[in-house]
Image (cartoon, rainbow, N blue to C red):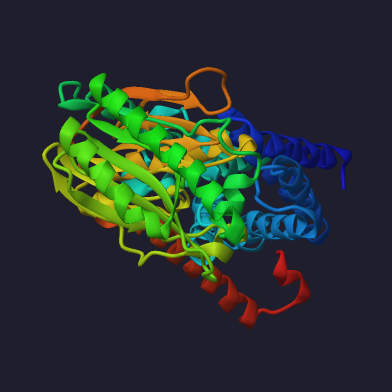
Length: 499
């Protein structure tokens, strides 16, 4: 094994750590190429082990503070992430040499899409760690999501790495690399050109309204106090003082909403569980909110945490949408709980994403982690939503990444997205993923975000057909694996495993 291979492993691990934490889209392409070249240029067994170690090191460093776990649990999660990340490289070593040369470069991208997609369907982590998310900000490339979802972007990245490394191995002999090289470059170029034209031709004359996103006051609760209340850990003698503090929180949000309505807002949205309330006080508060919405003729999208004291699952994590006539149009309970703390205290919803017709278009709602599940949010696309409101609650290390992930849901389904975030970055985007405004909870000054949001969804292939491209990749990889197994059974030898 050459020292150069070890250097490539080190470069790949370093770039993986970087792109896990920081938005550097080109670095993700280089990371894939470096790791793939190192994997292909080392002996199979040793190379697979070194690859896994390099991937583990990169992910272990890059995810510190991002994954909601620590200690042994954290490292166990990283083991799972590293193993699934390494699987496409193993598939490439096993299968590529047994495929006709013109198709050899396709095994790696097929495997990467298949592993990412199946992991998103089978793992509670959903689409966390998808390669596609590293390309946030590259708007022409991001438009691929409207056609093939995240999986089309992942495929293009992995195919480019596979083709470049294969051409490198052929010393860029044009007679050999011409067909695979032109195919890869042509498809990638067509995707970028199509994405660019999609952005250029995007209409700018659609109706819009002003939306405001509020955030809770930073000095009302002591550190950890809202968490303790959400868990229902309120002693009987604390019930009165806590209720008084929550009442001040309720007044603050209602007054802030009234202020923004007077300033011209048509929609005022509050972050996830920012409106904590005891169950017995919920109906009276909803009535106050209804009166405000009706009087000011404003939509209120309330991120509400209803606390059931003494209940084994004390928290209802909800989005309540009150329309401009004072009607409760949506009362939706979060369907996907984050593993760990939230899953242990939260009453889950029924898995049906609500979309309702209003005077200003079709509005849907989800809550935070729900938006990490493309097939779940696709319900809004199939229901022809014009706007999706996603109250969220992040933390400092996660604030940029998680909000960026949600933007892909807007492109996939062709609706505008409003995402008020506590302890994170509030943002709004249009159906093409273009940013309308952001506000960082951790920045000094007023945390209120006001934006002009276009209303009027566009129908996309992804919203109609779903994960067709991912399933196609799974089927193609299964066909290649079946062919390999047939050859292996007929001509078995220890060397057959890695060719």
